[in-house]
Length: 167
Length: 217
Image (cartoon, rainbow over all chains, first blue to last red; front, side, top):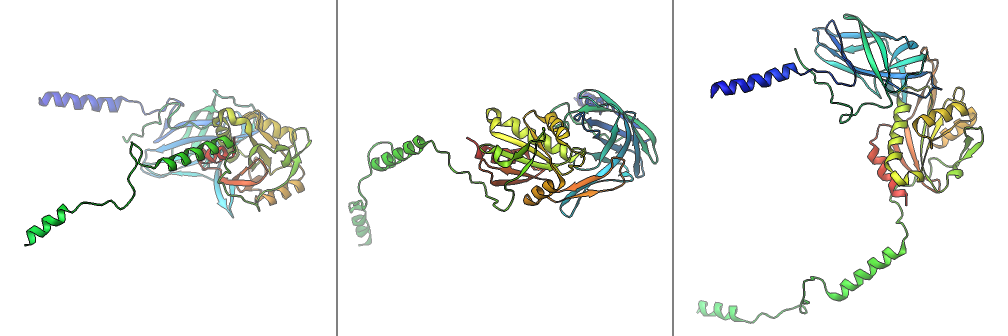
């Protein structure tokens, strides 16, 4: 009886550990305590030369991390922007960095922090991928593959949200 | 003897005070029921849609004339007979504006067969960079039926003022050049041109959809 109970628990534990924590809509990039998931770039009409990029950063380290800069080959520049409400107006401004707390995560989502991809050299099309190079203060360079999407991924569609696992 | 008195009281016949209840399964009297049925029939026969309960914002919005995709003048009155959802933004806005356009697209799609009764209009606050062709191509990305409007800075300022839209050029040192800070309200206009709803860009689709539906046939 005890043995059976043990095997059931062991099997459940193994299953939990073996399950990959990635969302299947984008690859997971990892380096130096930092992992980046769910990266996507918005597909826009060709007349527009700028678009936005979004992703979620997980910091497994013991100290606060900072995203300092992003580059990509498909555009002249990438800036990190945040949206502020000032005098009732929504204002988008470049920020110097994005903090990611130790043992926590920071999401770049529509309406908040986002990457502004400026001066597109080619127009990203829905379904394609775009490589983004992220520079962190501690972790250094992390390359991320972002999927080009027409709209944000929803909770219920396009795969499950990646599981956050504590190691 | 008390016991006897009690028995006598109990034996007293019960006289009903109100008229006899009607027989049959209905708890309501027959004449009242017939009156109710007649009222329902009359109401259904009228075929007139009840007046929507949405508020009327008489001081927000109003007539305007701006430039359409071929630089032709487009007025609010051109959309008479359709409900409108109007949003003010600019095409170089990578986050809020596309997100809002997608929300409006969702409302439009969820109207199904009645989608043709709703017109989505995107008005630029950046006429310097957003010319008629730019606007037309931008909105077409979201839906072929959406309309983009531009004009001279004076015309845009005037329309923005009527809709209580505040906007400001921002030179925040971005490689994208100047950005525009702006209020992000979505306006619902009824078929006669009166503003009937105000929404935030991040409001749920259901809220807008419900209000739009209340205006349609």
